[in-house]
Length: 222
Length: 207
Image (cartoon, rainbow over all chains, first blue to last red; front, side, top):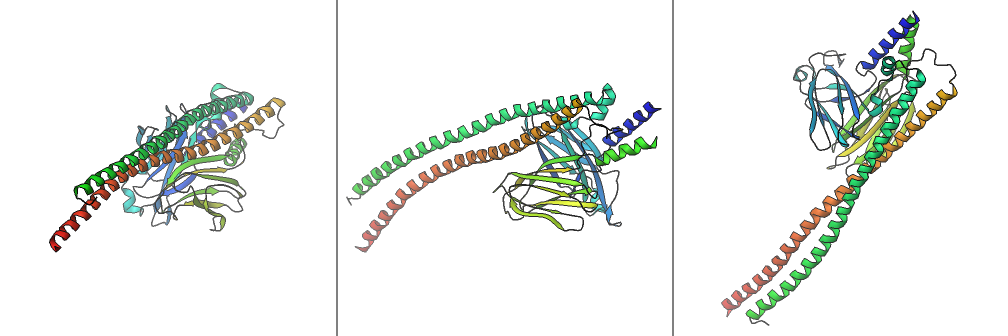
């Protein structure tokens, strides 16, 4: 009886965890407006995004709880501007991706449904929740699956956290290298262009003098 | 049977929620984010401008009755904490309306709630063993480490974007200046030559 209660309440917990975010931050988006978010992440990091959309009801003067038939197009680009996910989801959606190159990934959402223009006057409310790295792990689920005690679960969480910190450290090393290369290239450019411009200045000065001198001599003014 | 269910519900609604978003704010535009909060809930807002123009943005936070809880103009980064006094929708807005051509990239971290339960405890008020409390303190410290890493990542991103802008600018200005140098040099010579040719023609016609 006790076991049943635990299992059923864990099940309910998982259900709540899986449902679209009701407590997440939300924002308003226009009809075909595209909203993009940037996630700078190390490689082999999982990102889970969940969203929920609500349509503005002109007659009621408020947002409808949920509208079937609304769709959001989700497009995710990796740091090399290559598209790694481009899919249409329903009015509530959940998208997942794992990064294979470290850097700035761009998550873009836009609604391409034409219903809005007819009914809504163009306003859509989007609840969005993006979790990165060890925050994507659903610990109650892991505990239920592997039958872990609380201490074991806490140890698992610490391991995940430390792993994510290590990945971020590696990514920092990679970023520092890029930054150093950019600074060195700026230094090189400043050096060579300064030398080149001074050289060009002297050469053109000499050319001007000689050309004008021969010109005036030809004109018999000198 | 009902009690565990209610406890789950209570734990879930009291649990911590954090949203980190990095978005681009085009010039002359405002972007607002809303969150529905209970009374007595504590929330923290951290924002930082990573790229664009003078690296500053206007930010304001309002409560459900539209009172200003926080208002700052042209800030590069800041933190704001508040415990809500009423239930409702709280709004945090960023405005780039003072800028005419530079769009800004802003990082926002919105944290609500305090409880960080790992899994639903049936009896969350029992004392922790030494092992459990040690693990909990490690967890808290690692959270601080992770936040510190995020801070460094954002500062580095800002510096890197500035350095890349500088590199581009040096490159294009140098090319531009060299072209201008050539044009001015040849232009000067041609103009001088044209003065003397005209004079010669004028002299020829006047005599």
